[in-house]
Length: 376
Image (tube, rainbow, N blue to C red):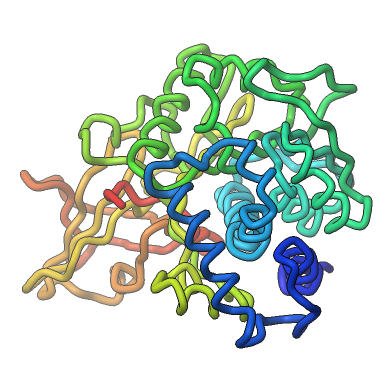
């Protein structure tokens, strides 16, 4: 099975060629090239996360920006997409996929999302993007396995042959006009049992826009939220202007990403933050008394408090230290993104209360690369 670390030598080789650097180590940046690579990564990072002036397809016509994407954003996007897939599958909310699923990667760039799904599931993939510079990198990195097509999604979907089992849009939906986003999803040639994986930057603007799109699509009755949600009701995070839904995924970053993170003063080598959404045609209702942990506040004296989300909304749940007992011991190991069964909890004025006789059981398989309705 191919993994991210297996992809690193090719990523480094392509990035070095774009930056006019000589060949170097296959798994990391040499000291002499680190500073130049970090400058390129910093410029792209600021342009995508700061004022977002580089959040456009023409960005990658500049070789330094395309090289920085391969070095910095490509590995992160690959890991995020596999985390979102794991999140949906662990919750049991997406149907079984065919043995060789067809994947469509929209706004693909150099196709980290397509390759992440191919490496996890096999099958075939088509990458669609408007960048004539990025698509050749997708073909090179996949050794021709990923088919590519140049098209501007701002004008809608191009004509495509057949249906796809998976459609992924990673860090591209927010670059389209707001009014075109729902129409794009509605037009997807998705198989009846297929799934749409959406990944956006973990910024307030992009995160809330994704939740607004979620609610708009659910109101049509033609779509269901398969992950990270445990509810088909309007997203409770949108009730508060400072909230949105983010994911945090701990990962083993490739050595060159750790080098760049240290050089840039960022922590992307420790955990990846992003905004996720998985859509399907329908989902089974979640088991009774199961919640998603969506927030872990700072420790409080005398109690532990979390925020959980389900059909009942986004609510706090607390346990006083004096009420710790074997039946609720799992409360101590819950983290943002976990699925948890809460049995026998009481309703108090400040939310739910776990007592000595309450049952708290972390559901194994709950992916921690999951949302937290917390700013940032």
